[in-house]
Image (cartoon, rainbow, N blue to C red):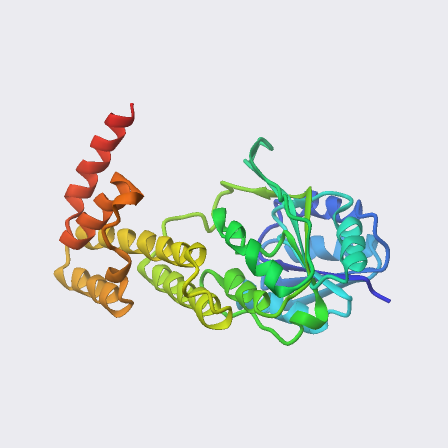
Amino acid sequence: MIKVSVIVPIYNVSKYLPNFFISLKKQRLSDVEYILVDDGSTDNSLELCYKFKNSMKNTMIIHQKNMGVGVARNTGLKHAKGKYIYFCDPDDTIEANLLNDNYLLAEKYKADLVIFGFNVEDINGKTLKTFEFNYKFCSNRSDFIKVFPALCHDLLINYLWNKFYRRNIIQHLNFENVRTGEDLRFNILVYNLVSRVVFNNNIYYRYLQGRPNSSQVKPSIQDILLYLQEDQNLKDLFFNSWNKKDDSRFTEIIQKMYRDIGLELLTRAETQSSELKRKEIFEIISTYNIDKYFTFRPEKGIKFNYDTLIFKLRNIPIVLLGDKILRKLKN
């Protein structure tokens, strides 16, 4: 029996693959299959994959034309036979006991999903931030929903690589082929299906931040539209599937997401030289009814209500001036 299928989408990451493969070779769990999906790499990533396969049994290499990371993961998922699925990225590294510890936890609790800790590191290996979890085991969906708002901080609901998925829960799901946000879109589908969830407080994953040519760049208007669609999906999960429309913990999450995007759109509009582009951005604000998330609430403090005011005025120079004043007041 294959215990875990490790699915790795690979595209032009030859610089990082040697260290990544070393971390795979150190894994202490037996009966694991490694599915490496080369998504049309033009460097020597595919060659390095074959070298890894020669030294590691139960390795499958799938080579396809470049179609995006979501499609690559779908390909891997179609071929997976493990009881559990683990997705990871080849420009990061994992601890030697990641597969073993989380497999044992999943088996012990008959879990649909295991969520574990990770470090964010810079390119020099310095730890920038550590994410750990205090929760232990949610034996039903109601318990999982209760702790879910805490996961929404720092984008913890987005990531794939700090989660172990039971294959029979996700095998019929697919990643969308979009520019950005396919991880969260997939996870939203998962969150609506799982009941038994284990939180593992230990650190197993080292995520590399600040690498050249990474996706950590300023989002385009098209990206922002995709974020808005993600917000709509999350709102549907909270308010329709989970019936949390009257729960302030969930309404506050949705409000913050739309406010952040609203202010970003306002900034883009006010820095556009083209009146047509400005009009298109304001139409996006209107289409998604973002104004309704900008209401005055004295109990939320100066910054919250100041942002509400400038959004209603549609005046970004005032925003920039106000930010300077607030920073001086803090200092």
